[in-house]
Length: 535
Ligand code: CTP
Image (tube, rainbow, N blue to C red):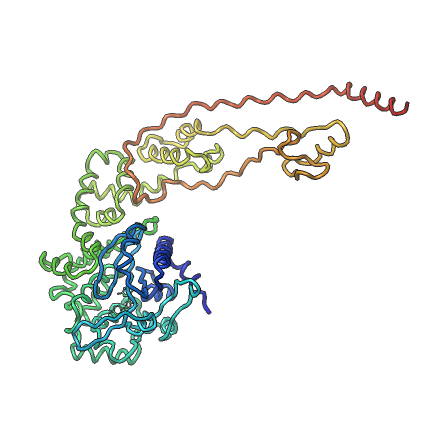
């Protein structure tokens, strides 16, 4: 059996993995059976980006709200009928926790009757084979993959396959989903699925799609890696107007969107975790009327997305204003301001800023100022023993960076002059090996004190005065510039004050060397001993 836990652990981001553990702990404590399901499993196995975590529990997840709240998760919405919680787990991890259920469609176009069910039954009500898998997160079966429709084989074959002939009739939103997945993964539909899809389109089943399913699909567009491509494909298949009758690709700000995706990649490469979804929605609907925008937003089930999308322009304006004020009067202050800002706002402003000063500052923040970090003389700092082992290292490295940014340290010589006073005193040299008097002492002197094993004959016992272990200097670790990391949630610094050099550390007084008897005296004493023996 393939080890899916291992695959999961290496494919999920550290924050997503923490999210899995958190949900697992809460479900275990509540005695509820838990599975990772749907798109998360598909993406773990296929190697595509894992956009969110879908969990299914055998029980009612709405009862766990308080526990999630206590664990620091934000509730982004819930669906009372399907008993689903929409959460943002710590680390900005999107998650959905749904109840395992069956859906019974009594009439086309009517919402299904939802009944609690086992995980096996739940998998049977799903859209495509590649989405109908579950990974157990339960004690005793953790890592077991339930794959009743051979979804793994379809992932390998890169095919979208419905589970039964009535799939598109029962839930016409699957027509939109099939189009979206085909555009995203470039996976064609399997032959029979394609036939059912064509016939459902011809018979216009899509007009029976439920409002809540439409809202869900609108929100999903925000998380696509290539949203413009997906929107174009939906339009070609006549499904974009299902999401909103006035929505066309002409209403999209395509150049803004493509700039957004490029800048997002640039920020990801710099190490930022940035959620572009509110900005994606902004550009996808840039030319729609305000009323259409409110209609679209009203249908989306996740209130975190609605709010972030609605407020993005106002928040960006606020940040732009601060960037033109005193708070950003110097490069170092601007750096601190942008480091403390939400990466989502930096991203949005990077694409939309019209004010030259604002645009220039953000550009410098993402490019030119990063190169200044390379001027921090790391090898020389290591030589000076200014390494991450020092408690004050982060502050020193940060101060050098700030001074370099502001042009207050203009050359290497100036930088080293600034750094030298921070160098800690070198570690004291190891004490010289002790020479003993008799053969015992001589043997002890031969044994290197650091390698001494306490308790063995002829060797030196540790910490008993005689032959204490010499202090071993730890090799300096590789130094990483701490300022290189994005500081999404760092507090803004008050002022970048030039740093005063610390007072010179007092040198430790050298230990007086132990007095040794003069050579002559030793020889005399030895002679006396030999005489005594002879006698
Ligand atoms: N699902 C379904 N039919 C639908 C919507 C959802 O069967 N109309 C099931 C699928 O098993 C899907 C899971 O619910 O995998 C989660 O839905 P959703 O988050 O919309 O889809 P994902 O597959 O996770 O897709 P994405 O990668 O776009 O998030």
